[in-house]
Length: 259
Ligand code: DGL
Image (cartoon, rainbow, N blue to C red; front, side, top):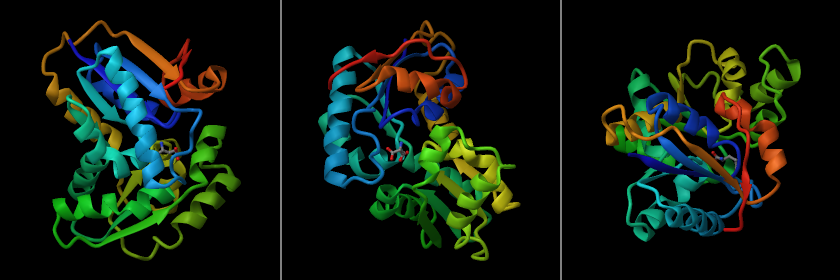
């Protein structure tokens, strides 16, 4: 039986949970969205690490077999502290995403977009260079794509959406990148608009690679009863209003907790 704990700063990690459920449909999951403290992407590494440790301890106390850090910013800055503090396997999104990017790239420069915290940490840049020594990585922060995705403004035909995406991606156009890492939980919702700005460039969503890694740890079909509980640290109704779009299936209830 696999009971998987998943946390994110808010709703974004549901894109990772979605991929995990596609790989392990029977898994039991406990999802925590730290909606009282979102966003993590503009906070210091120390603060994000402190929040991440609290989230992890909350889920650990409920009894989980594995923790997925379904937030790029938290994965980028807090993974070593989480691995040291917990006596269970911890999977982050950065390393699987970096490996997938190297697989998708034909050897040219690799682009990465993420929150300011993720990009400033250098975690993707370092992980890509572990997978391919000497890799040329072009990393850019794209903060406004987070609220855009939460607002549901993701239609590639919408000029406003295209304009915001174009502005962030302009520096990457013409740099010859041959793969782009969507290094933030929210960006897969904007994949259509991003692809339209960078035609022919493969987009790498780390969620699928994370799901493959999680699936490999629980071989076999009978991994659980497919039960899912959702916890948030603030305003469950706001979480529920957008959660279905990120998870790709309805989320009926979320419990308000204090971590
Ligand atoms: N979940 C965050 C990430 O993937 C984005 C939202 C935030 O800044 O908290 O980096």
